[in-house]
Length: 292
Image 1 (cartoon, rainbow, N blue to C red):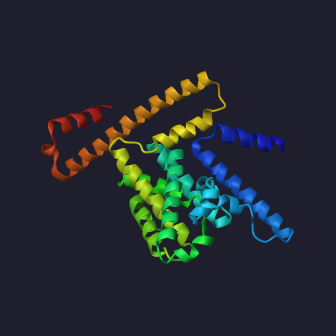
Image 2: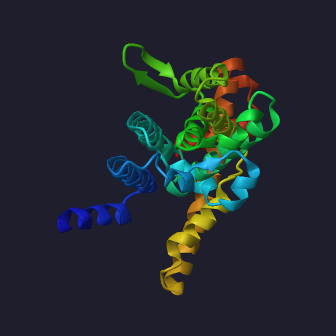
Image 3: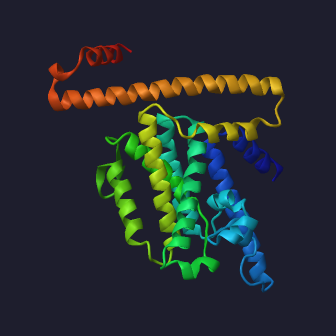
């Protein structure tokens, strides 16, 4: 038994940010479910711990539970809910890491969750249909964070294709847009809060993609905060070296992403109007890219 926990701790410590996010979600799920089972066995009603982890839609209540802005995006109670979210997180997280780095994945997960939270709170406190439900409505789950990752990939690489069972190859952006349409159509369903949060996460993912194409990384500030938490127990000298190295990696990745976006634009122009339509600078960029 000790070996199992030792291996789990080592895997978590040495794993990628995708592994860490998955472990945290699954760990919280197991704890919440165990407490729920114990409560049922002793005839306690409900699962009290969820009240401390879910994010309330009522702003006055949220003021007393500000940590739920973060905790809600790691909290699940139903098996299908966490299985679906973790599968999407794994599949699209792997694709994301082929285009960007782990720091950006972790930061986008947080930002997507916060965007979903803000959208959820705004809708429930301003739209007449939801106002009667404000006092007893809450939000939990990683869906908004996952949607941010899905839409970030889809709108950064609109030509990216994936294979789906029974359907075959399809552009990821079509799958993302179909998911968004479903959320819009289900906005008044029994899981209205979840669908609203999905929309917020999706919009954040689109914003991330459009800014990255301009060479701007909106995750940078949150990534620095996550670095601080990750390194706060390490010796200062080591932390400074790690920080400097990550700064260099960030600058390199930003330049690389900007260069890739420029080449994609040139290729699109080449495909649409031919080689002669390119400027001298564009021809030079295309030549340099072919030599690298």
